[in-house]
Structures are given as structure tokens and as C-alpha cells.
Length: 126
Image (cartoon, rainbow, N blue to C red; front, side, top):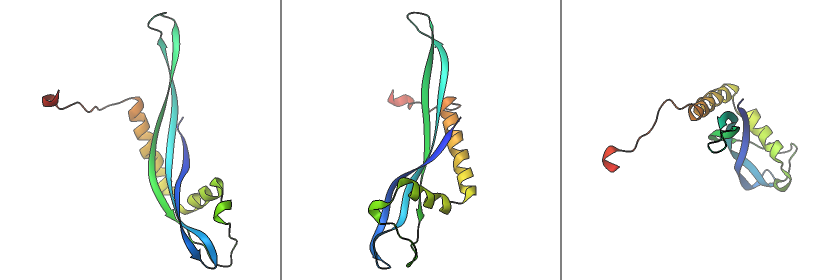
């Protein structure tokens, strides 16, 4: 089963904004899907059954703008947590967009697991 998660990759901040310092205004992130698939096989030497496990991943890069409203609760930059920033992302991304990302990532991972197309080298470069 494919699992999805947000991974914060960077943030942009204003040095000064609404009497606060280092105020984040943009968050860059990856939306990552990953799946682990186990396949039964046979050891080529011992001929005993073995399980081969492979991890497959795909991701979408994106960013959201965040706005601090002066006078509201403010967390200093050095005290921000990953879960707090992911909360900003989750509240900013349209659920329809998340569904579209999940479809794209799922299709890409399924293509990695069971390829239906291939890219061959150009015959004149072999």
C-alpha cells in the first residue's frame, strides 16, 4: 500500500515583518509516495525460496505561501517544528490537488513496479 507524506525542503522568510523577525512567508516541500513490495523468488545458488523486498518512491515538488497576521500568536523561527510547518501546508493545499498528486504518484509507482513501456538506447549509439 502506498503511503504519502509531506517533506519540508526549505522555507523563505522576511528578516523583519509586523514587528517580528525571520517571518516565514513561503514553504517548499515534496509530497512523497512510497511503497514496499515483496516478491517471492528462488536463490540462484541454493535454489531455496527467498523474499526480495524493494522500495519504490515518487514525489511532487511544490510550495505554499503563508501569511503572518500581526498581533496573532507567533512562533520564532528557531522554535518552529516540522509538524507545525506541515500543518501550514495541509491547511493551504486544496484537497482536490492532493487527490491529483496521489493519483499521479500512484500511477508512477505502479509503472515502476510493473513497467508497460521502456526507453531503449538509440540504435546508432549502441
